Image 1: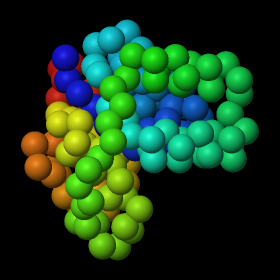
Image 2 (image 1 turned 180 degrees about the vertical axis):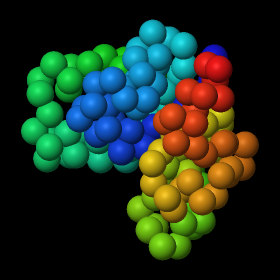
Image 3 (image 1 turned 120 degrees about the vertical axis):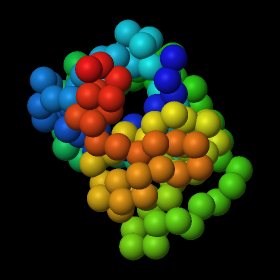
Length: 133
């Protein structure tokens, strides 16, 4: 089972387009095909963003259930790889601590890295192509 870190933008894309690659990846995690790795910082950011976009209760419940089987990590190493947007480093810290196979994102600062430590960084559509074609 692949371990994945999902950028907040994956959840937002899934919310606004329930048939998107992002939505499919969330469904795959819910089906226990992949293991979601998260940190308290990522979960806090996601809660705030879902509140800000006024996500429907049904979607919030779906995401809450996703975290039931997810693996929580508490990063111990600070990362300073992304200089243009230092906030992005929290995703790398989570991937490093959780030994994630993939960091799935649409953020160009992260995508430009392509790989960090043992973690491949890719867009949702690219992840699905790599794993399911």
